[in-house]
Amino acid sequence: MEFRRVQAGIILGSLVALVVAGCATGQKSTMEPADFVAERQRLMKNVGANWADIQNKVKAGNTDAVAVNAEALSLHAQRIPGLFPEGALTDKSKAKPDIWQKWPEFQAAAKNLENRAGTLRDQAVAKDAAAVTTTVATFGRDACGTCHTPFRVPPPQQPAAPRS
Image (cartoon, rainbow, N blue to C red; front, side):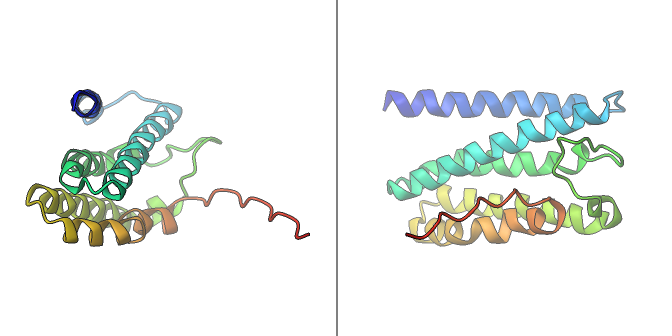
């Protein structure tokens, strides 16, 4: 029980820090492209950590507990478009130029993540384990994939292991 409280405190603390940072970056900024790339990468690592935590909780049968993680994903999604001002690319960025060429679609993909995470949160709060499990099963493809597939350079493929 104590571990869950500590874990919830860590998640909520990181959420508060990201919201505060989001408020600061929401105003006219003097940030350089590298700053935006670094902030995007920090945000996406936190998204990934929350997603991993959701998956672990669902596997453990603790579907009610995913609400806090889903709320974090929803709030992070709101920040995504603001972290992609035109030209914010570096050699460390995995963003495709298509983001700026198809800006309305990119914004829609971020909104889709926000909405699907909100749905997941609401299902968890309602203690609807079946709905949470169903949503989690398709979340990666239907929420994350709608942005990553068209707007992110795919990670390099690992070479196949030689057959013996």
